[in-house]
Amino acid sequence: MENLTITKIVAGIKRKEFSPTEIVNYYLDKIEKEDKNIQAFLNVFKNSAIEKAKEIEKILKENKNSFKLLGVPIAIKDNILVKGFPCTAASKILENYIAPYDATVIKKLKKEGAIIIGKTNLDEFAMGSSTENSAFLKTKNPLDLEKVPGGSSGGSASAVAADLVPASLGSDTGGSIRQPAAFCGIVGLKPTYGAVSRYGLIAFASSLDQIGPLTKNVEDAKIIFDIIKGKDEMDNTSVSFFSKDKILSKNKIKIGIPKEFFGDSLDKNIKIGIENLIKKLEKEKIKFEEISLSHSKYALSCYYILATSEASSNLARYDGIKYGFSVLNDFQKNNKNLMDIYFESRGKGFGKEVKRRIMLGTFSLSSGYYDAYYLKAKKVQFLIKEDFNKIFKMVNFIFSPTSPFFPFKIGEKINNPLSMYLSDIYTVPVNLAELPAISIPLKTQTFNNFPVSLQIISPKFQEESLFNIASFIEKLENE
Image (cartoon, rainbow, N blue to C red; front, side, top):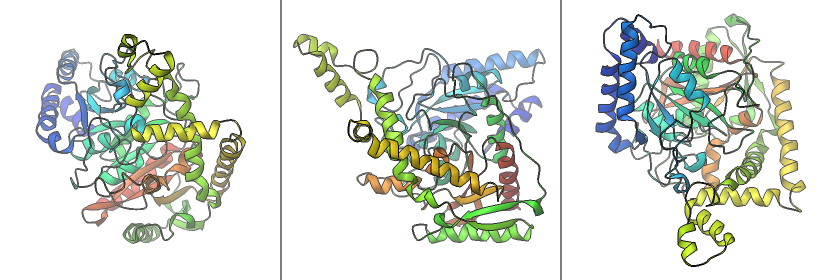
């Protein structure tokens, strides 16, 4: 049963090669044996998963087997609500919080027969690039246990890469699906902003957050995306998904290579790997053109003003009064005032990186600095969007590295936030421009057991085209 994909699981269950219960027990056993070393999971829903598998078996006996995810176990990043189970966002402040409802994406997965097998680790409130900022665990990279899996969806990525699940969901605010997918050698999709409902996702930066799949191949990413996409009345930023995709013959495809993304900061082995792929694709009659995304050099600075500003607002709700961790009882005994409860609850409940970002965001929004920082960042965001709009009038896709470097050692960058933030230098512009992008591993281009990963960017709502080109490259790499 090793390295099963969604397609193989659904086909195998329909052909009665194995039952949903056998599949669930197989993955539960793997998690129990192997996750001690990886620490991808914060919570495993053993009893619930087995019960759901038995329910699906009853449905199969009635010959109702049209589900797209028939008996497929899926792991969920622990900032996405699953009703009746803890949802911590890897923070002490939400350690005992139980989700009162299912996120829209969870409802859609369950409706198609998916089995939610557990919740995965992340950087606290999805703030980080290594999954070292979790309040509970430090997840390791299955390809090298001394290295980080990336972040913030590191638990979701490592669970798939270690074959503890066939697929998982993550969230992407500035690269948090694509970068861990790259570090762990799997596929990760960040959809167009609004293509997938955010209802039931614990907010980090609401204008940037998107939920997306992490899978073993492009086909599985497409299957999950097609299920979770679409308008949701509970999220007014979601849209009725539409696509103006045109199926292009290979000799009509033109791909842009941004010169700003291939400079000295890029690991030479990643650069060589992508250049080798370009040579292969040129033999397939695909055209390439050097392009310029001139404002991308400001993207990281722009992102860390906008994202932290939104975070400082979104996280204001965790005040030690309404829900989550609180020192209220201790303070009542000592007759302390309300302000002390706020300070103490947030001080003890939030981790170092979350506090850092709240302070950065609060400063950017404060009187006298709003125009100089937040407003200026919004203007830069507009220029970044315009850069992409102009380029997509000339090319069909943009190729770039997903990350400027391969996975680093656990602890190597944790005390150097600026160095850590550079992990997302190629992914952040995509979120600012509200575009879709997919990260895929180039399995013929590896360095120290880590595959080079390619980021492919397309115009808004052209995920279908994105899957087509990514699938073509995947097949080329597997030949």
